[in-house]
Image 1: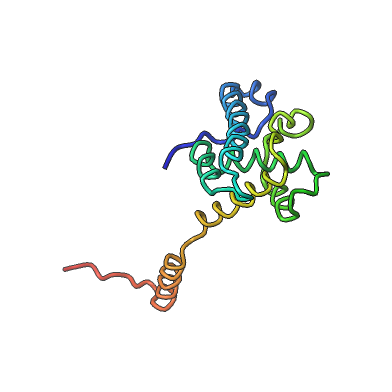
Image 2: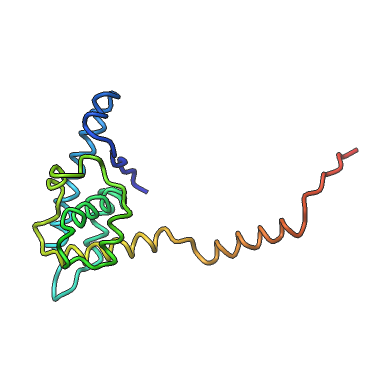
Length: 164
């Protein structure tokens, strides 16, 4: 799995005060690059009223789910007046923690607004589905965990006799 630099959630002032300016700037640049990559992926993969799943895959492989979702959530939040984003995606956007600098007017720099909001909404829906699919525990793993827990409850631990 590819390593992705985490999103820096604090303000520029905080970064300066705690000598984290390099991390702040790197995250800021990646947010802008992610914004551009989302727009490019939508342009490249939207055909015949359909957004190919490769669009999301390309962006997530390059930037990871966290950064991709932060940039998308910021777009929805900054356009809270725009009802072309689905109610589910608007609710979802409110659950994603965004960097302090995305709040207010500065957040406009990170808008994915080169494409129609309905296309961005399609992209968001696909990101959410892919994320849930990848981060949902498998049924097999859940059954195995449940069986192990049941066995532990039925057989309390016994002290093992030392060998003689």
